[in-house]
Length: 252
Image 1 (tube, rainbow, N blue to C red):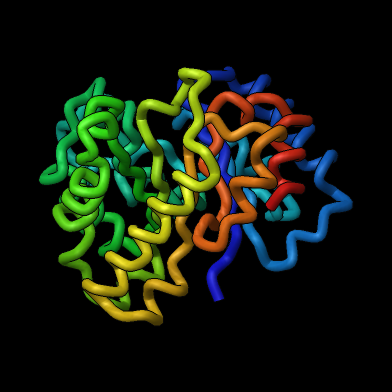
Image 2 (cartoon, one colour):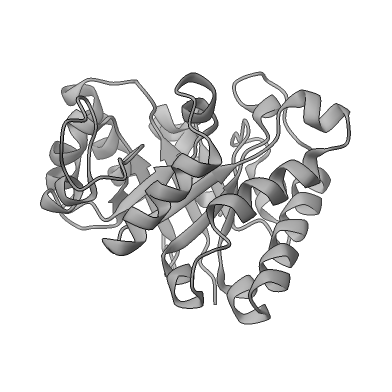
């Protein structure tokens, strides 16, 4: 049975002390929450990953990298490899976030290389994808999402999917104040799950967690998470405030 997940992407925010303060505050505020085998994840900036991992002694909050390179090592200034992540006990990474695609020109071919490197090194992936506003207006959103998934993920073997979490992020609803309606989120999530079923099988489709990422807040999280194919959220701005993030966790 698939798990519900709330993952906080801290992006390029918070220094070391601020990161430790935030994760400590989240941990304290969720101490009485029974996660029931569900998952809470935070993704600090890479230079603070080790400190946050070491501070989380009870392991109720998992840590993910915001990015990962496809090479094991080499002349790739500023990058982080799977081996480096595993060396600080990080076994989870975001890949394909819309900001990486937009600002760093990461395309499907590059992301496929990163996916393969993560799978080879047994790094779990939260794979991000979604359409721009122009795609939505032109009613090409389903085609865009299908292309992103097929090009980067649908070459994987069935067994590899145990290390895949999907995160649908309508780019037009990130940091804009706009949010897809719960019905729009469910429509796309059901489409995604059916795509996985068509390309693999029903077992994989029913077991893969699909997160929604697009201006999730305490005020809308319960309604969005209540949809049958929405398995939690990838949270941006609200993940930087402990009280808001914990309210979203409770909505899970």
